[in-house]
Image (cartoon, rainbow over all chains, first blue to last red; front, side, top):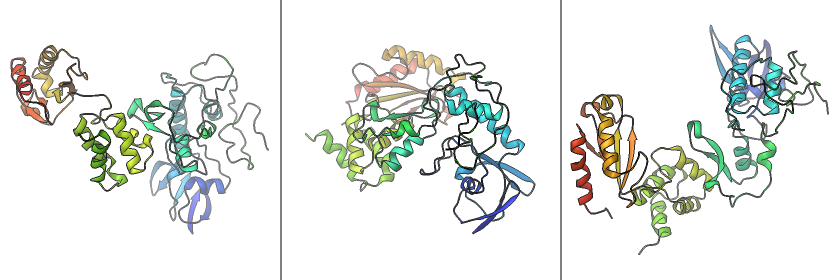
Length: 221
Length: 158
């Protein structure tokens, strides 16, 4: 067992747990996009960053890929974290402005403007579909091709892959695939219609509630 | 005549079908065909038991690999800072004129492919033109003819 402190609360978790899992266990919600409990952690979206304090220094780390350590001190919503997280959401929105999940996250965090040039790619390269296909379907029909700005999710030679069983899982697991927000034109990269600048209470029932909170708040199923 | 399938299979067999030797295998395939043909990637993937997309991902990630057919002779003109100030652009223009192609293109007879690079780490020799891995330093537009002619005379490899 490893003892660590998250947001000032001491906890004990088994070795090998990630900081994100430890926090979720405690009911502390860290927003995520590329993380999925049944897939291997990937650390692509960086939305789950937390502040790790060591002596007088602190660093920002992606909590989904950060293993717990003895005596670790973690802050999940310090000023440094929220500032960086806002920037990350802004950057993600710039490449995927029509995603409801992202727009909701932006509204939740009080982002008022996307300061970057919007280039709609409809994908944030989180790799959830790629990992789902490979790990859950044991198929591997889709993957990343190219590098840098031309990196994208594709099938081999853009042909329907032999491995594909048309399960539709890649679409289902995509955190941004819904074409949301019927609000019409985006203002400063934000949909604006569901602008909800008040902090939303987190509910203990749904583990993913921090990801997509609509204008009417939480639904408890 | 050995079939394409056999050719690629022999290359893969040299590496005992190890998954971590994808890059080495692709390099060997590329030196055989001068580029990575689709059928070769399919053979590599099936022989290694990897999904095709994984091999494609590696092939598209590295700039050294090309999925487009390339000519027998690779002509790389360095346009790095040192070469640039010593007149690399004039050398490039001359190569383009002589071969009748733009950067990244291949001549119709599939003999030459022209590409530009940003530094070869031999700035003292600039401007540099690399033909088939051989460095030609202190190039000038006048010397281009000689360097290219040498390649034209030599019979194609293989």
